[in-house]
Length: 467
Image (cartoon, rainbow, N blue to C red; front, side, top):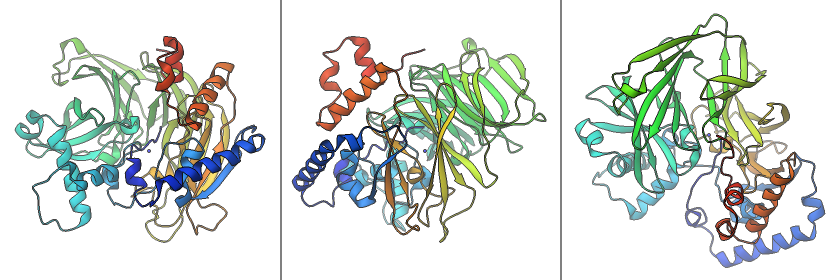
């Protein structure tokens, strides 16, 4: 589900609106009302709810009004097995149906199978190199959560029934091109739902959690150089529910990691000699194995130095037995770390799922606030798209929006917008105000960055400050 910015085409989302001019006028009128009441809407200490609206109102202008990129939250397509936070397969499948891609397959049994097959064929035809898709008979089986949080970049799980091997490939949807392939020794078909991945901000490192025998998992570290991915480190075994996310304010050295460990589980760190590796990462030469002694047991949130694999900060997390961690995400300015928890039950029937957000200060891991929410029936955290359960953030990182039915008995899906507190330094506050001003008056960051000094331009665009 990290940041969750679905790159849907606004024209597709708002296709049911008859008069765009009327909508824009309505947004301007609402903005004028808010500007007249600035003291009521802006001078908050934090965590206050400043808007509770219906989902229809959210789509028809409230998202832009409060500084958010247009985002649907809900998906009606049943393509959830090939969705991921930051990527909506429904959006792409609509584009394929509108004629931008032609499939030769006919007479599908259902709309779902049409969309699903077309989507897989689209990736195989446009993004996977012929040597992999044709000669090695690899086909797309799913999209990996975590690495797809960058919006325009997604990770696909591909499998060859001939070789009986699984690979992972990264593709750039914006540039419409293949970036690299990872893994050459994953035997058998791996369930994409049990895989989690993260890609560093400088695009030089990828970390993948893959399931192994015994109900545990392995953490594989890859270095990316051009189109070559080389496995240089493996940590095994780890908790199967381990989640992680690179910090947006660091190019590649800082990682937020959640895991559960016990004294009875010895863990080893294996280093590989990458100088002798082939581009695919096969024929690995193990150079060093280091036992990792578990000093902390239980559920912990860590800030890790990726290069040395050392702990910078840690925080014990108490999770109720009936809940589990669904996702980790940073605000765009890296100030807050949001953990989303959901209950363990299946809600494909009439029951209402319950979720809550724990908000941490990203540098100290101090828990600052908890927000409880409740969702409509038939929204299942186990079997459906996570977009409806994942919060999004405004362009200026000053507000958070999420779906809820709290206090209305689950009758109607609503969108709640809360203010994130200004626990920032003066430089960060200035950035918030500049971005908020540009967004409010329909400007773009690119309109001024060319006129600014290089470092200030990078700061305004949320580029990482540290290695």
